[in-house]
Length: 147
Image (cartoon, rainbow, N blue to C red; front, side, top):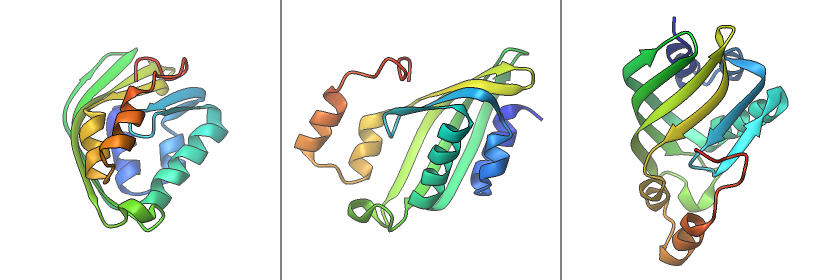
């Protein structure tokens, strides 16, 4: 089963250990919505645990996958209801279409990045014009380039 499919199955199942099993110990994960990059086992665990804590209902659907031995790419639809862990956005639904890139080494992902309209996501989370402008005007960190 491609890494993309294992990843989405674990994410939808809220299975942090299953998610970690998709990645190498030195993997990086560039999360576009959060605007940060997690690295290594501990960093990925913290990121995935945060994602599970901050989400209620979640549905990640893969529409198309292109895969080779070194790279998997997927187009997807993502729908998540925000939990009470984020009070200003609690109960809001985030609904996005995008694409992910999984760089593969030894059958697991060593680098993940995603592409979607971040502005649309932030508006759906309830950011108003001034904070939205500040967030979207920031330059990406060196670790998050390409995300």
